[in-house]
Length: 511
Image 1 (tube, rainbow, N blue to C red):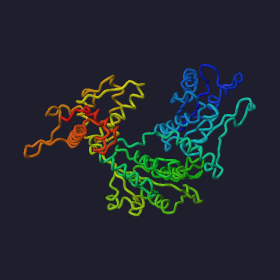
Image 2: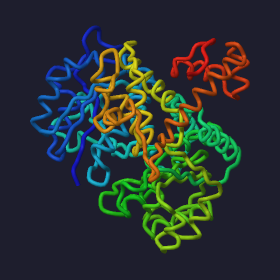
Image 3: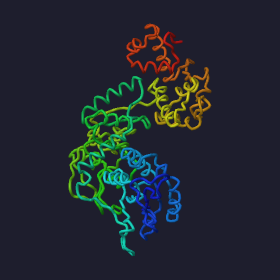
Image 4: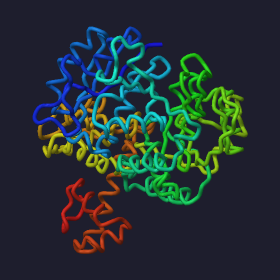
């Protein structure tokens, strides 16, 4: 098992010292280096965090730490005020996800140093670790002034393993509050096509209930967004929303991730850990790629869903849980049941309601709306410098089949933000998308049937019909947007957005 140290820098910042900074005694190397001085403190990687004002002073600390662990990196956290709990929580929550990807818990044991950073940052380390968001051991370096020399244990592990500690009301409410503040606003399912309107109607129905929901759809369609929308519109919206991907862990590790474990349950289990079911208590648990579960974990999951109780790995006591489960897969679970690779009883337990997220190729005129939404993200990152997409480039987007669905489209738009300055033309598109413009009939892709008749792609045909319908409504209602929108049964702002996308004016009929 590799070892990772995660710590804030203790090198200070440029400018006046913060109020919590005391003068460091002469000869005190600081808690980070004092930890690394210990014989037992051997790490394979070190991640040092700092805010922008502390980047320059922290580089010297990183160079010294690199002598202990060559894989040492400095990460600048985009927080201007390290005493702001909400800003820190947003930043550290994202960081936790990144670290678990870069240093998978199955292969890396993480230590968090509490002795560096602001008091607010130290508090959040405790919350993140105890809530199970950050799987780590907490360490404290005793200040040099209080440690006689020599001292056998200047470093101690901070353990809050009193049964029920993570469920103390104040801590639980703080975690829920901070999660709510940090929750992204991208849970809105963008699109005005008929499949998306149907999807939102289905979500509204199942959200009002407490039944489990099975969300199906191709990879990249936005199944987690649908799950978040169900949670946000449900009576559990004030509770936590926890997402777990069932395909990224080995069987033994996944059981621990889902149900937690007791100290000593297996090699490396140094402390008790709550699983995602306990973390989601009172809220919603989203299990992605549910079709990848092994038969043994399927059996354990079924028991939890039936009884509303669980036992941690290596534990004896049963724990009551109140969790709504949303599951998602791109696989055909019914076929897997027939094959015997997925339990029939678990399948029917999960599918209290079924939500199907449509692929992008079935969503007609939503491409412009999605592109506009993703361009807003690019504009925010580029500090107001927006991009304009030419009609030729947009036509190529319509003709592309989008095997990666919305995720592929978002990645394409994000790429424009890197390589384009003002305008996005056909030549700026990814090769597999730009190639659509080279097809015959003025750049419009055509499929030819055996009889020789040309057939337009579905997305183009839908867009053409939509443009004609909007033009006709504007013509009939003499350019009155409110009446035209009511006739089309869409929102007025949606009508204006589509008019801009199709270059339609109030008094101009569709061509």
